[in-house]
Each structure stands twice: as C-alpha cells, then as structure tokens.
Length: 119
Image (tube, rainbow, N blue to C red; front, side, top):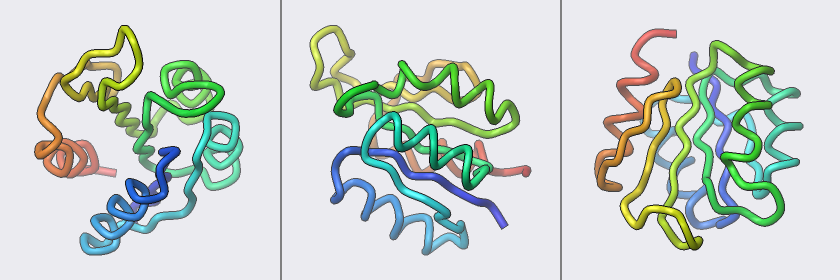
C-alpha cells in the first residue's frame, strides 16, 4: 500500500487531499503545515509519495525539495503552487521526479495517479 505525506499550510487543502487519497486506497501517514515539519515527517514516516505545497510559512517547498530528494530518492514528490507569492507562476506548477509540469489544478489527481502507478 502506498504511503503518502501531505504538506500544505492550509488545513482545508490537506483535508481535501486526504479525502481524495482515502477514497483511492492510499494511506496518508503524515501531514505537515510547514517546511521543517515536513522534513521531519518525511524522515519519520518514509512515504512513497509527498504532495508538497510551494508557498508555506518559513521554508517553502522548493527550499526543502533538495533535502527530501536526498532523504527519499525513490519517493515521488509533487511540488505545486497556486501562484500567490511574487515570482511564482499563476498557473499551478507541479514537479514530478524533477520534471516541471504546468497544468491546471483539475489535473492534479491524474498526475498523482500516474506518478503512483508503480511502487
């Protein structure tokens, strides 16, 4: 069973992601609302996949991405942004295994499913 870590500073977003994951047989092993907590949760839970918000208090998703990749090189990491911060694209940006995908939000479920197709 796939272990999933959800990282977003907004409770409502984590709740929607959790409901989506639960409905598809994914196990949410941890949640975090900031970068430092996310790194600690990734080290503790060793998830197969991480859904990672770019814009959070303290360290942003892109700030902790190198640590997460070093700690969990086999994990699928989806880094997304809603474009609220200056200099961040208005279109959501997803990074999956180092590849940048500029896609609409409605494609997030497909992106995650495709990334998690094979453990």
